[in-house]
Image 1 (spheres, rainbow, N blue to C red):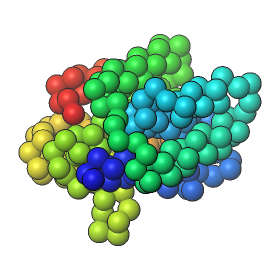
Image 2 (image 1 turned 60 degrees about the horizontal axis):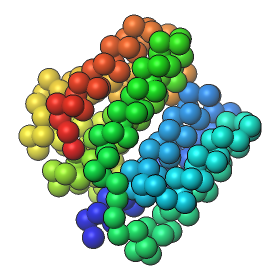
Image 3 (image 1 turned 90 degrees about the horizontal axis):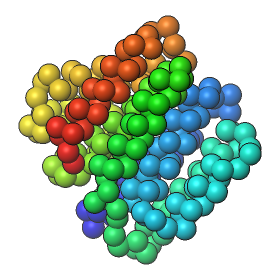
Length: 211
């Protein structure tokens, strides 16, 4: 039951982000949503028709807006099956490998000069890792309203629970702020070098604090 609730919480958080995504969303905002959907599908369903459908969508020669809508449909289908109890297992064993891949992607994008997209992808991987840490440490991921907590709240709760110390909490806060600036188009708020430092820091943090 806890696993089911955790999966549904992750999916509902991403669905909520979709409802708040403007039609005039920037590329960085859109690619951040795309990344979160693809990561959630692989994390929850592993190698499955859902993952294959995601790959087919991403391979299409179509606009990022079309891909966002199509992946949202895949995610809603996955949610229906999870809620119905059709998925009993998850690919938690490859959790570290999945996020390592996304951080490698972020690093490559940063090296090629796409620092804004790199920051969004690394930040999304970090947030998903925080949610996994909460699940592993039995830290509540839903707020009093029943809606998924924001990443900053999860970070504070994890530090309060003893999952990591104040220094790590401050580092995570800084990385989340950078991700949010990138996602909202505040590109003057950070430098390309800070993005590279963020990616290296997230990699080290996740290796040192595995879920």
